Image 1 (cartoon, rainbow, N blue to C red):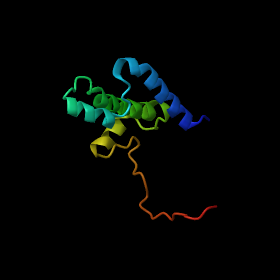
Image 2 (cartoon, helix red, strand yellow):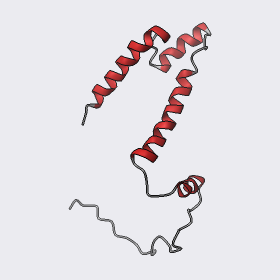
Image 3 (cartoon, helix red, strand yellow):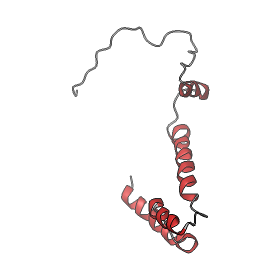
Image 4 (cartoon, rainbow, N blue to C red):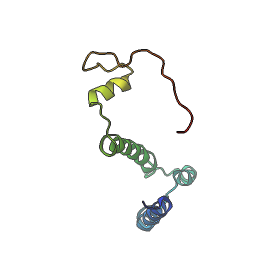
Length: 107
C-alpha cells in the first residue's frame, strides 16, 4: 500500500511542471476563475469545467465496471437507475417478508 499524500503531492508537482509552460499551471479552478472574470478572458477556462465532469464520470464507470464489478447485469443496473424494480430471473420474491434481527454489538 502506498501513501495517498505522496501520490497527490507527486501528481500536483507533475501537473505544475508540465502545465506551467502551456497554461501557467492554474491547478485551482476557483483561483483561475477570478482573473478570468476580471480580464474577461474565458478562452481556455472551459477545461476547468469540462475536465472534472468527464473525469468524474469516467472514474465512476472505471470503478463500477472494472475495479469492483457487481454481480448484476447492465439491464438490471439501468432499471434500478430508472427507479423500477429489475425483473427477477427465477420468478421468486427476494425475501420472505419476515422481520430480521440486526446484531449491533461486536462479536
